[in-house]
Length: 249
Image (tube, rainbow, N blue to C red):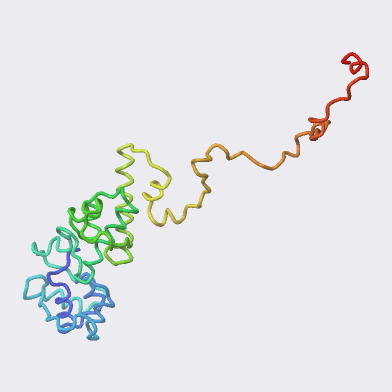
C-alpha cells in the first residue's frame, strides 16, 4: 500500500483534526502505532505543520467519517500518481553528515572481509561512490594510513539483513562463474546466522597435510622383538681362538 505524500505531516493533521485511532492513522500513513502516539504526546514530529489529505485530494472526507464510527475500519488512499513509488529509493543511499566520515572505515571492512562483493554492492550498502571504493582497494586513498576497518552494521550505515543479502548474492554469482573457493572464502560467503551456527572443524596446516594418522605413541598390538639389542652387542667383538693367534705368529 502506497503512503500519502508527506506521511508524517499527514499523520500530524489527522491526530489534531480527527478522532481516528492511532492504529488507523498508522496504517494509513505507513507508520508505527507508537510513533503516532508519540505525535499525540508531543514527543515526535515537533514543529511539523499538519498536511490536510482531504484538501490535497488524497483522502475523502467520507473515509474519515467511516473510520471515526468504526475503529476497525481502514482508510483508503485515493489514487494519486505522485504518491506511487515514493518509498523506492533512487540513486545511492543517503548518509547523514555525522556518519559520512565513517564510510571509509566501513568500505575497508567490506573490502577486507568480503572481497567477493562487487563495487556496486558496496556502494549501495554504505552510500559511497565507486572511485572511493577503488582508491581504498588500491590503497591510494589520501587517508589510508589512518583508516581502521569497522563493521558497517556497527556504524549504523546498513542493516545486518542487507549485508547478508548482498553476501548471498555474491555467493550465487561466484558459484555461477564456477570459481574455486577455499574454506575461508566459503565461510565468508555464508550469512552471519549460518556461519555462526556452523561447528568449528579442526584443520591442520598445509605443511603437515597427509600426516593425520601419524602417531608418536608406541603401538601396543605390535609384538616386541624377542632379542633385545644393546650398545655392547655392536661394539664387542667375539673372542679370537688360540689357534688363530699361533698361526698369526
